[in-house]
Length: 113
Image 1: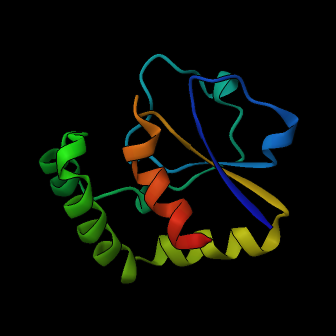
Image 2: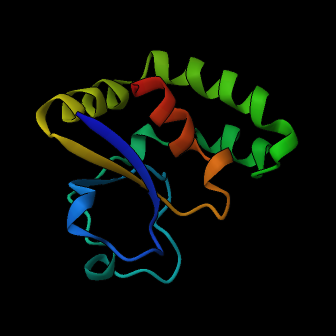
């Protein structure tokens, strides 16, 4: 099994396998057709409070990663995502942030590895 991450604004590819949007909010300016998603697990995204606190500030990423991991430990959607990983050979976690290296998708990818 393989877990990749990809920005929703990048073109979908057959090699992406099963595409799962992991954002709590729908990405701006992207239609459902263009997103080519197999599933949207919005509940696996960071809580609104954590998302607002973080604000995609790379300096806060280490603390964001800790807080988000704590949220995920009791999140049923994370268990659902783990199940999807076992059901599909390739899963691509799709996100909308500009900086994929400091996104929730990167945290999820690391936790699922």
